[in-house]
Image 1 (cartoon, rainbow, N blue to C red):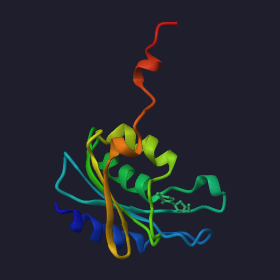
Image 2 (cartoon, rainbow, N blue to C red; image 1 turned 30 degrees about the vertical axis):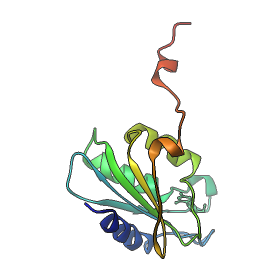
Image 3 (cartoon, rainbow, N blue to C red; image 1 turned 180 degrees about the vertical axis):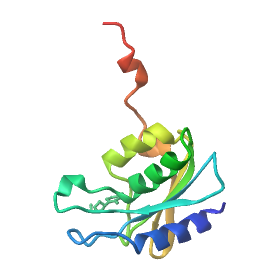
Image 4 (spheres, helix red, strand yellow; image 1 turned 135 degrees about the vertical axis):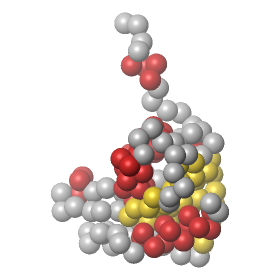
Length: 136
Ligand code: THU
């Protein structure tokens, strides 16, 4: 799977964005370790704004619900922003559950891939399971 393939799929997914409130259309596409398929998604907004689902989470939920236990191997994100430097904090938290530190994340706009970073660069510190297992 080339980054360019992922970018093209994210672009296609972006066309399905339901973004009547922000008019900010987002597409995402990813591959996992458990399937050859590309899973893509778009942002789906809601009149109750907090119920909005970002494109990254749409794609992740599609992938994990069909192939439980998968890890995201690579992900592309496309918007029409000049620089879209990072997914939102909620998406980073969800990504931290399914990405590895070295998962490449391609940040793209309508001109193509603008920047590729490892997931760990977007989220260098994570909420850790050990915090849950801690001795009180
Ligand atoms: N959004 C995404 O889908 N992904 C991002 O990385 C940033 C934000 C969506 C949420 C909302 O529908 C719109 O973009 C404006 O924030």
